[in-house]
Length: 232
Image 1 (spheres, rainbow, N blue to C red):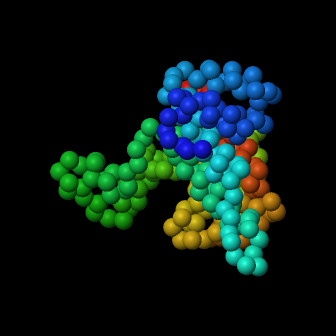
Image 2: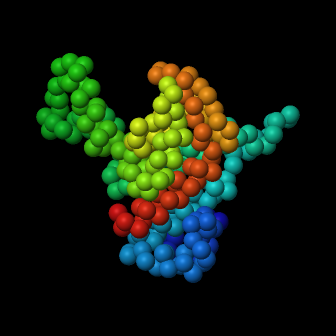
């Protein structure tokens, strides 16, 4: 299978993979087909096939394998680290907003190129505005906000910091995105995504996470269907 970017043109090949990726969300193939046909444009169908096929191969049925003597071929904290990165890559791809780094964004705010940041407080304000209006985390929070209220509550209760559950789905999205970023930028493995509760120490006290990888699959699948159902 070659992912060549022409998914609808080859939907007889790609569509079964999409259905397999989301099989637990639909009662039968006919129900899945009805959802697929409800997508209003060829572009939406193409995007749907792209995201679900990549999800199936990279995450749901994909594992990071190692070939090291004396080691298991699949190590949960290694493969789950890569799965989390792949999930957030797919979530971020569900947006028409192209990425700009913070410096590019600052310069785009001032045509003269002489954008002045006179103190740390002003810089912090600009950075908060950047993240709220353009940063990658904004796209991720928007994805999680589409989840059902029961799912949001489940996720917020899955992580306790200092003995208290996270207060909102926004904080849960930020928590997961921070795990992803520490792996990408600092090579810190994502130990908190595990089939067993994991305790660690953070800046605000003891962190207790109960985030089995299957829960993240459920969250992603629900969020993807909500995204396409909303027609956004």
